[in-house]
Image (cartoon, rainbow, N blue to C red; front, side):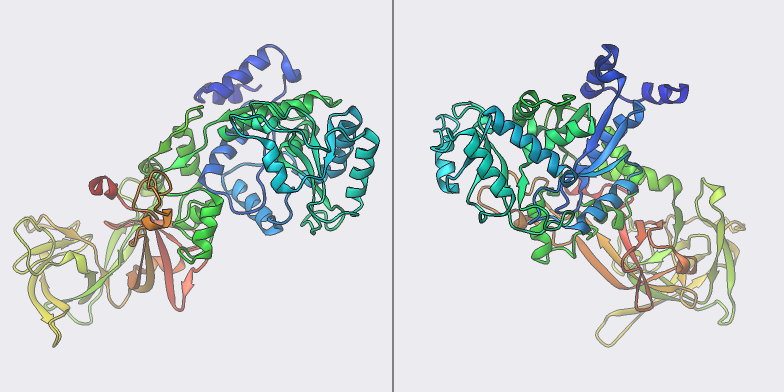
Length: 564
């Protein structure tokens, strides 16, 4: 281990998995090697919960100079597609990780079949013809033992014959299952003669029509780990009861190595759901605009919303690795992205709800350029010039006609400073026939130019603005938490989780304006819209007509703390 790697490892917070690995290495286990894997099923898009598993498995491999494979658990062709596999690869790379080897469980179908024949020859597996409903009845309950199948005592020869005929496609779906022969009275339901192979006459996205029988997850998982030489098989707590079966297969087959499974708590995040079934329902029902909707907890959705891989990794680091299940506050994730963007984002002017302001004492043909830094504490980010002219745009929220003395933005009889510009003084409100405000008239004080102010005037309010002629049109999408309830799918009786959709989770402002420097904004580039929040140039719909599209990543402060 190099000195730099040793230093990185020393600065990494310890957890029970690292303690296990440290102990294994001290005892000389696994020939001093560390090999992990990330084995997603390509049946959907990865979400923030998967990010924890990715960071743990890949992070440990990095810290211990080991390897981490990406393996697609593609044993259920009815639900899996190549496009999901491609999306998963993109997400892993986006998070900043590189896999040592790329595998598919389907790469091992022949080896898995051969090992299954060995189980049959040992008398440890049999072909069962029980219909699914009877098999469930035979399985028993948590308090009652199961019953043996009438087919449990088939001869080895008959089982081999049937299994080989299953492989050649002689039987229709559901006719037979290959089951492990373990213990139908086991208190662990997973050990009650679990299925190993089932018949599915369906084309596989990776192997085509080469196979019509497919291995079950519990069997394929441990055997794939073994075939890849994985030393530490890391998974979430729901697989803890499956560990006995994981070990049973490896203990009863002539395998060259025996990986060990260790479980950690899964990541549950407030104001969201991470069940693939529920996320799919949101997509199918049209509640969201697809799997990459910026409100979704999918990594593609978070990426489109403007979350950086650095902020996600920092969030996972702060959550930590434990065996205790808990729900993490959304505010922790949001604080990580605020800290990240606050350090590196340019600060720019944008008007979400425009209100015209005419500076009546400013010459009609005059334009001044106001120097404005992109970040007050980061001179290396540079600066730009903002055009100041007679006709300006401010945000409608920065004017209140009936304002009290504690309102320090623009109001009748009041004055404000235009950031990087002049102090302006209210003159009058112009309304249409229906009484709607259409523009404001103000005057400016030429002695108050920012950076050259010798007037001695002091005003409490500072607002942002744009020159109407130079501003560029934009569509601004203000995204918020998808669910108003912190735990939408837990503890609400018969209420479905969709009852807690936040009606203000997406607001679209079609008449927004941004400063000219943003016209060349690259898709995926992030900015702080001054006094508004952090926004990102959309990566999918970067241009809508002749308008730029920006998505809000997060507010400048935690507004939900006040709501709570």
